[in-house]
Image (cartoon, rainbow, N blue to C red):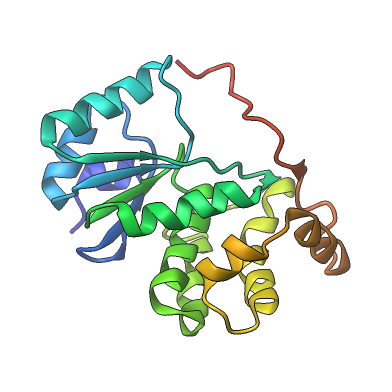
Length: 206
Protein backbone atom coordinates (compact mmCIF):
# COMPACT_ATOMS: atom_id res chain seq x y z
CA UNK A 1 0.00 0.00 0.00
CA UNK A 2 1.38 3.40 -0.98
CA UNK A 3 1.98 6.08 1.64
CA UNK A 4 -0.27 9.12 1.38
CA UNK A 5 2.68 11.52 0.85
CA UNK A 6 3.86 9.38 -2.08
CA UNK A 7 0.46 9.81 -3.67
CA UNK A 8 0.37 13.53 -2.84
CA UNK A 9 3.80 14.10 -4.37
CA UNK A 10 3.31 11.79 -7.37
CA UNK A 11 6.28 9.70 -6.21
CA UNK A 12 7.34 6.66 -8.23
CA UNK A 13 10.52 4.69 -8.72
CA UNK A 14 12.08 4.85 -12.18
CA UNK A 15 14.46 2.07 -11.11
CA UNK A 16 13.95 1.06 -7.50
CA UNK A 17 16.89 1.91 -5.29
CA UNK A 18 18.52 3.92 -8.06
CA UNK A 19 16.33 6.73 -9.46
CA UNK A 20 12.89 8.04 -8.56
CA UNK A 21 10.55 10.79 -9.76
CA UNK A 22 8.11 13.14 -8.08
CA UNK A 23 6.49 16.56 -8.05
CA UNK A 24 7.69 19.48 -5.94
CA UNK A 25 7.29 18.38 -2.34
CA UNK A 26 5.51 21.37 -0.83
CA UNK A 27 4.10 21.72 2.69
CA UNK A 28 7.22 20.53 4.47
CA UNK A 29 7.07 16.97 3.19
CA UNK A 30 10.41 16.74 1.40
CA UNK A 31 12.51 15.59 4.35
CA UNK A 32 10.12 12.74 5.16
CA UNK A 33 9.96 11.68 1.51
CA UNK A 34 13.73 11.54 1.23
CA UNK A 35 14.22 9.72 4.53
CA UNK A 36 11.52 7.14 3.81
CA UNK A 37 13.04 6.19 0.46
CA UNK A 38 16.71 6.69 1.35
CA UNK A 39 17.19 9.33 -1.35
CA UNK A 40 20.70 10.75 -1.51
CA UNK A 41 20.21 13.57 -4.02
CA UNK A 42 17.67 15.75 -5.77
CA UNK A 43 17.89 16.54 -9.48
CA UNK A 44 15.88 19.74 -9.82
CA UNK A 45 14.58 20.21 -13.36
CA UNK A 46 13.23 23.73 -12.72
CA UNK A 47 16.61 25.48 -12.82
CA UNK A 48 18.42 27.43 -10.13
CA UNK A 49 16.01 29.81 -8.41
CA UNK A 50 17.95 31.00 -5.38
CA UNK A 51 15.57 33.92 -4.78
CA UNK A 52 12.51 31.67 -4.41
CA UNK A 53 11.43 30.00 -1.18
CA UNK A 54 10.80 26.53 -2.66
CA UNK A 55 14.37 26.37 -3.98
CA UNK A 56 15.90 27.58 -0.70
CA UNK A 57 13.78 25.09 1.25
CA UNK A 58 14.90 22.28 -1.04
CA UNK A 59 18.57 23.18 -0.55
CA UNK A 60 18.16 23.41 3.23
CA UNK A 61 16.62 19.94 3.39
CA UNK A 62 19.44 18.48 1.29
CA UNK A 63 22.09 20.16 3.43
CA UNK A 64 20.45 18.87 6.62
CA UNK A 65 20.32 15.32 5.29
CA UNK A 66 23.77 15.44 3.71
CA UNK A 67 22.21 14.89 0.30
CA UNK A 68 23.29 16.30 -3.04
CA UNK A 69 21.34 18.94 -4.91
CA UNK A 70 21.74 19.39 -8.67
CA UNK A 71 20.08 22.10 -10.75
CA UNK A 72 19.17 21.44 -14.36
CA UNK A 73 16.69 23.19 -16.63
CA UNK A 74 13.91 21.83 -18.83
CA UNK A 75 10.80 23.57 -20.15
CA UNK A 76 7.81 21.39 -20.99
CA UNK A 77 6.68 23.63 -23.86
CA UNK A 78 10.01 24.74 -25.35
CA UNK A 79 12.53 22.54 -27.12
CA UNK A 80 15.74 22.21 -25.10
CA UNK A 81 19.06 23.66 -26.17
CA UNK A 82 22.02 21.28 -26.37
CA UNK A 83 23.71 22.55 -23.16
CA UNK A 84 20.52 21.85 -21.22
CA UNK A 85 20.53 18.19 -22.21
CA UNK A 86 24.30 17.90 -21.80
CA UNK A 87 23.92 19.10 -18.23
CA UNK A 88 21.12 16.61 -17.60
CA UNK A 89 23.10 13.56 -18.72
CA UNK A 90 26.14 14.80 -16.78
CA UNK A 91 24.00 14.91 -13.65
CA UNK A 92 22.76 11.37 -14.31
CA UNK A 93 26.37 10.28 -13.82
CA UNK A 94 27.30 12.71 -11.05
CA UNK A 95 24.35 12.40 -8.67
CA UNK A 96 24.67 9.84 -5.87
CA UNK A 97 22.08 7.09 -5.98
CA UNK A 98 19.27 6.82 -5.35
CA UNK A 99 18.38 10.27 -6.62
CA UNK A 100 15.06 12.03 -7.15
CA UNK A 101 14.07 13.66 -10.45
CA UNK A 102 11.51 16.41 -9.83
CA UNK A 103 9.91 19.35 -11.55
CA UNK A 104 6.70 21.06 -10.46
CA UNK A 105 4.01 18.42 -10.97
CA UNK A 106 6.23 15.40 -11.66
CA UNK A 107 4.30 14.74 -14.86
CA UNK A 108 5.93 16.31 -17.91
CA UNK A 109 9.55 17.44 -17.55
CA UNK A 110 10.10 14.68 -15.02
CA UNK A 111 8.72 12.14 -17.49
CA UNK A 112 11.24 13.24 -20.13
CA UNK A 113 14.13 13.16 -17.68
CA UNK A 114 13.13 9.69 -16.44
CA UNK A 115 12.85 8.41 -20.01
CA UNK A 116 16.26 9.78 -20.94
CA UNK A 117 17.79 8.33 -17.77
CA UNK A 118 16.61 4.83 -18.68
CA UNK A 119 18.02 5.12 -22.20
CA UNK A 120 21.26 6.63 -20.90
CA UNK A 121 21.60 3.77 -18.45
CA UNK A 122 20.43 0.80 -20.50
CA UNK A 123 20.74 1.87 -24.12
CA UNK A 124 18.11 1.96 -26.84
CA UNK A 125 16.72 -1.43 -25.83
CA UNK A 126 15.08 0.53 -22.99
CA UNK A 127 12.97 2.64 -25.38
CA UNK A 128 9.68 0.89 -24.52
CA UNK A 129 10.30 1.31 -20.80
CA UNK A 130 11.32 4.90 -21.41
CA UNK A 131 8.11 5.72 -23.26
CA UNK A 132 6.10 4.23 -20.40
CA UNK A 133 7.34 7.15 -18.29
CA UNK A 134 4.82 9.29 -20.19
CA UNK A 135 1.81 7.20 -19.20
CA UNK A 136 -1.30 9.00 -18.00
CA UNK A 137 -1.47 6.50 -15.16
CA UNK A 138 0.19 6.32 -12.75
CA UNK A 139 2.26 9.40 -13.68
CA UNK A 140 -0.62 11.78 -14.53
CA UNK A 141 0.94 12.86 -17.83
CA UNK A 142 -1.86 14.54 -19.74
CA UNK A 143 0.07 16.69 -22.22
CA UNK A 144 -1.33 20.03 -23.27
CA UNK A 145 -1.06 21.23 -26.86
CA UNK A 146 2.55 22.44 -26.67
CA UNK A 147 3.77 19.53 -24.55
CA UNK A 148 3.29 16.77 -27.11
CA UNK A 149 6.93 16.97 -28.20
CA UNK A 150 8.05 15.42 -24.91
CA UNK A 151 7.21 11.80 -25.67
CA UNK A 152 8.04 12.24 -29.37
CA UNK A 153 11.57 13.29 -28.39
CA UNK A 154 12.44 9.67 -27.63
CA UNK A 155 11.63 8.53 -31.19
CA UNK A 156 13.49 11.50 -32.66
CA UNK A 157 16.55 10.81 -30.54
CA UNK A 158 16.73 7.14 -31.48
CA UNK A 159 16.33 7.93 -35.17
CA UNK A 160 18.97 10.64 -35.13
CA UNK A 161 21.44 8.75 -32.93
CA UNK A 162 21.53 5.77 -35.27
CA UNK A 163 22.48 3.34 -32.53
CA UNK A 164 25.06 5.57 -30.83
CA UNK A 165 24.79 6.12 -27.08
CA UNK A 166 22.35 8.83 -26.12
CA UNK A 167 24.95 10.93 -24.30
CA UNK A 168 27.36 10.91 -27.26
CA UNK A 169 24.62 12.00 -29.65
CA UNK A 170 23.47 14.78 -27.33
CA UNK A 171 26.99 16.13 -26.78
CA UNK A 172 28.02 16.07 -30.40
CA UNK A 173 24.98 16.32 -32.66
CA UNK A 174 21.69 17.17 -31.00
CA UNK A 175 20.18 20.27 -32.62
CA UNK A 176 16.85 21.80 -31.52
CA UNK A 177 16.30 23.18 -35.02
CA UNK A 178 16.45 19.64 -36.42
CA UNK A 179 14.06 18.53 -33.69
CA UNK A 180 11.63 21.29 -34.65
CA UNK A 181 11.81 20.24 -38.30
CA UNK A 182 11.29 16.57 -37.42
CA UNK A 183 8.26 17.41 -35.31
CA UNK A 184 6.75 19.39 -38.18
CA UNK A 185 7.33 16.51 -40.58
CA UNK A 186 5.57 14.17 -38.16
CA UNK A 187 2.44 16.28 -37.71
CA UNK A 188 3.58 17.86 -34.45
CA UNK A 189 4.33 21.37 -35.67
CA UNK A 190 1.95 22.66 -33.00
CA UNK A 191 3.27 20.21 -30.41
CA UNK A 192 5.78 22.71 -29.03
CA UNK A 193 5.77 26.44 -28.40
CA UNK A 194 9.24 27.35 -29.66
CA UNK A 195 12.90 26.63 -29.07
CA UNK A 196 13.99 27.54 -25.54
CA UNK A 197 15.17 31.11 -25.12
CA UNK A 198 14.90 32.02 -21.44
CA UNK A 199 13.16 30.72 -18.32
CA UNK A 200 9.65 31.99 -17.74
CA UNK A 201 8.29 31.82 -14.22
CA UNK A 202 4.72 31.38 -13.22
CA UNK A 203 3.46 34.44 -11.37
CA UNK A 204 2.37 32.06 -8.59
CA UNK A 205 5.92 30.96 -7.75
CA UNK A 206 7.19 31.96 -4.32
